[in-house]
Amino acid sequence: MKTQLEHARSGKVTPVMIAVARSEGVKPEKVRREIARGYAVVPANPIHCNSGHAIVGRAFRTKVNANIGRSTERSSSREEILKLKVALSAGADFVMDLSVGPDLSSVRKSILAKCNVPLGTVPIYEALSLVEGDVGRLDEDLLLSVIKKQAAEGVDFMTIHAGLLKRYVSLALKRVMGIVSRGGSILAEWMIRKNRENPFFSQWDKILEICARHDVTISLGDGLRPGCLSDASDKAQFAELKMLGKLVLACRRRGVQVMVEGPGHVPFDQIKMNMEREQIDCYNAPFYVLGPVVTDIAPGYDHITCAIGATAAAYYGASLLCYVTPAEHLGLPTADDVRAGVIASCIAAHAADVARNLRGARDRDNAMARARMNFDWSRQFELALDGETARKRYEQTKSKKEKQPDHCSMCGRDFCAVRATKRLTEMSGIRSQRCRSFAGIK
Ligand code: SF4
Image (cartoon, rainbow, N blue to C red; front, side):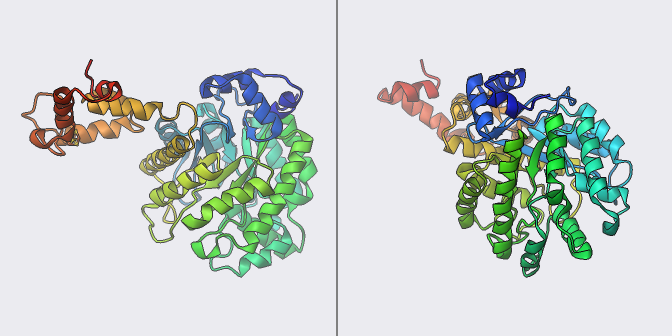
């Protein structure tokens, strides 16, 4: 079986590419070309046949990923399925199952069965769960068997931290927060205890064979992503990034689709440099960022610190935004947290797409402006990223006595600037046709 990358390189436009082109409103040839160059990926394991398709790359709409998954201390399969439903209805384009603990295969299978978007995993979580958290019992064969099993079950993309080499660990341990990636910290401990190189790195060719066989997209994990502003853009982070670039080339040579994961906690003024550096060091492989979170001091509101950083990241180079929920740094997210996180990241993704003039991105904003000018509330709720919340807020504060739609409680009838503008437009007759049509005047 050929991967989408191999098909694209041979000049073939596949049904997956046609489906993606339709949803992006572009020609299939553009999709094929971007995949062939390695500038875009379509995680699409054929075994996960109930999944729709989504493309990640700079030439396309910025996408949002939601992480779900059971911890060893909280939640259940049922709760995680609820979170999956919430994430999908809020607009997530991708979902990752980060579950740990016993019987992960059955949790994953039930998620795969209900997940109609591409699903990702972090195989080292299952490997460590199988040895009951004992890092010393992990070995190369176990890691490969987990990757093989997950690929055969239909996982569309996998985070593999193959670029965290043993010699980088000492760089990271000089930091304020050290290693904050779960996968990164497991691998660092394994390498130091066994005095051996990263098993994903030493088994890289075998991993590529498995991923090529099932067309699993590799998401190169950033095991040394900064976990606080003080650690951002340091030697450890960029040493790993450089190595990720070499692994990108190895994936492309083997015909395996690949994207690169990125930071983390990054001050706002360093985001542009980080995005540009990834594009150079990783040969324009799609960049998948966690946040970035732009300040360390807002626990409880990290979906907002993430959305601020993610907007800049998507504007300057990222193609896939991993959401952050209000529970980040505090505990396992609830279904409400998942919803808030997805919406915040969707806002960031859309704001960036508007700012980078992506074709059609602004259409919805223009339609919203028209609906506002016309006091067309139903249309406003239809266009809103979270129409349900918008409707609820409108209904909550609406005056019981007010029967006309051209009113809301913010300014009240006599102080409503929109009503005043409409009156002025009708009186003056000097406004452009564009303003008149926005104001709903024939
Ligand atoms: S009342 Fe104020 S907030 Fe409401 S539509 Fe008019 S101008 Fe806008």
